[in-house]
Length: 441
Image (cartoon, rainbow, N blue to C red; front, side, top):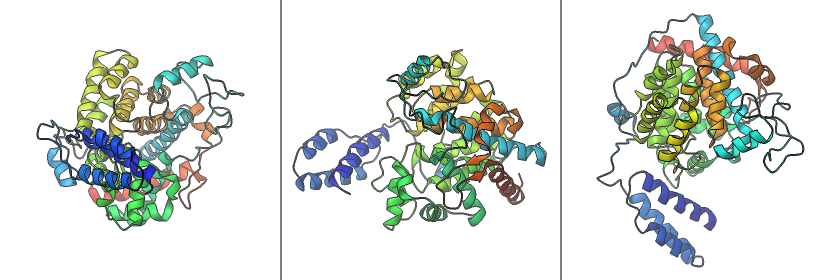
């Protein structure tokens, strides 16, 4: 790790430890003093600071309880329906799983051109081309303008879409399915790690996943791979990997959440893990009801009730009842949770929920709100579209969103480029039937 990388890790670790409830008084001042010195003295001081940060523990007055083992998570969750009767035919199950894949791809494609943009910038760009509020893929503008600076060759613009363009959100859905097929239902976190090393190029994974990948290569095993020099361990990376585990466990939120836990533990802790468990459990529930509040509440029952993520979920549920417009609820989200990094689990999960709760079970509204909310727009559009697709099924999704994808996904996952979405959905159905036979869903 060179000096620039070390500085970034220490700076971000100070923030991470503060968010976890640790006392970081004096650390920022010590960091600034260290970086002002020449190497190698600066590097020695930064290493010492990092060691002190890694040894810190949450303060006694920290109001949250946030374990990172499955056993402790389950002891800390509220009551919930661990199994839900699945009153749908095999044909409808196939329809729902295909809908989930298509909804995920449509939402991801919608959000990809403005990934990382704040809401205000997205709104300004759309208004400049008379496309606000968003109700379709971003238009192509050539030449781009200062207000609408999107590359006209972006493959996710309305006029350019020929397939689901390569994106890590979809790579991980594919790899989750492949892991279930190859390693079986008893797959472990080590199996997930091996699949990463075998199927994902290092330079195509990011933040927490890149740190964990580096740790795996250097011989660390899960869950240690999630924590060593990884200040991104509560960011959104695990949350975007949940979907395959929810798709294969319809009506079984506890099973879906456990699958998600095994995956998340490679790279994440605490709320990073909970984000993946929450989304997987919501997806499992979406096969049993189309009531979004019920789906969210079932997802909430699989994560610690006294965690920051659970508090944010309850807040959004409350705000959705109080405010008739999503924009007003968004203001509340930003006021309380806007201090988190733009790719953190908590604030992005809240924006996904805005799409689900204000979208009226309509794909256009659901993914458009999730994207117009800003932050990690491709992730949020994908997750919201995935849950909506599982709840409503493929035939309920407007063809104007799904037809441009041409039933095709581009991917860097070895062996899966140019996959057919319908083929991946059919393979997912096969695994779901194995899960049902094993766990009695």
